[in-house]
Image 1 (cartoon, rainbow, N blue to C red):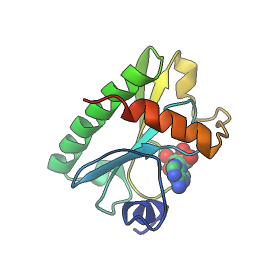
Image 2: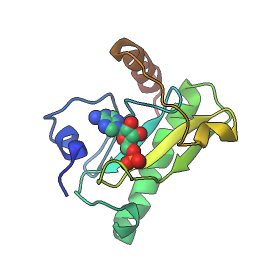
Image 3: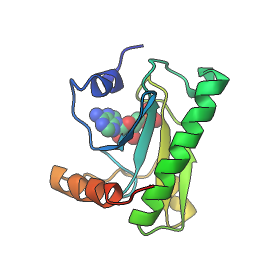
Length: 131
Ligand code: AMP
């Protein structure tokens, strides 16, 4: 299903890119729960994460692991939490959220409204970390 994330993949819309390969893209959530909240998406248009075939899903988790390690080096946090929600955008995605406590994983919390310059600073912090 085509969604706003398809437009990000095709570069019709911009994103704060964190990582990309032939199959996946990782970018900052524009309304993050906390600073450093990243979304990982497959380039294939598929709505629900658990409909992704096993081989691609395995690769997506490995891709997410590499991104999570970079976030953890760039953003002060105890761990990187991983969530699957998908109630807003019908394109499969994994949320990677730097956590100080379990409360940071509460998707009912108010989202941060960050400026583009704040998002750029976070992007460059994460992108300054190589694998
Ligand atoms: P959900 O589908 O419920 O997992 O939520 C979708 C997430 O995508 C939300 O956290 C939004 O803030 C985020 N989001 C929506 N549009 C964009 C966008 N253009 N760039 C980055 N993140 C987005």
